[in-house]
Image (cartoon, rainbow, N blue to C red; front, side, top):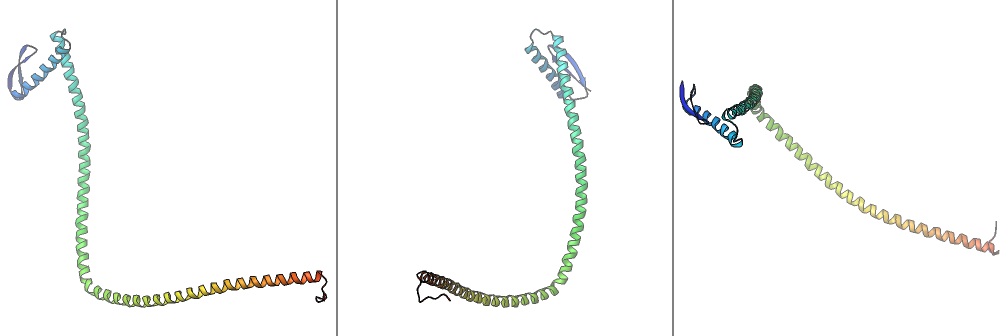
Length: 196
């Protein structure tokens, strides 16, 4: 047990405790600072009242500290619980990962054995596809030529259709003019035009 002499508000005390001398002096200095702070703010306050007020303030700090400690302790317990869950999830995930690695290794081995056979088949398939592509390119070229010819024919047909429309309009106009001429002649009783 450690014993140390301390001075609080001008009075010496012998302080005993399980802690070391440095810690006990630190606690006494803290209490002395609190009393002096209260006395500076209230110079007429008697020493015992300052001591009692200091004790109330320190008890208040202690209770607040305990409350914060309990809140932190609860948060710590929640975090610890979450950490435990995460560790379990990690272990499960790690086991699954190991399983996947083993399955992956098996697949790699199977793929290696199939690779030689598959490569030959793939090469043959590629050659067939190249031939089909070549034939399709030739057909596409022929279709482009036919398309160009059809466009040319289409332009000519459109031109001929337009020309035919104009000719038809011209013939309609001539027919209409001849009908008007006949009607006029009938009106004038032209002998050359008979009503039969």
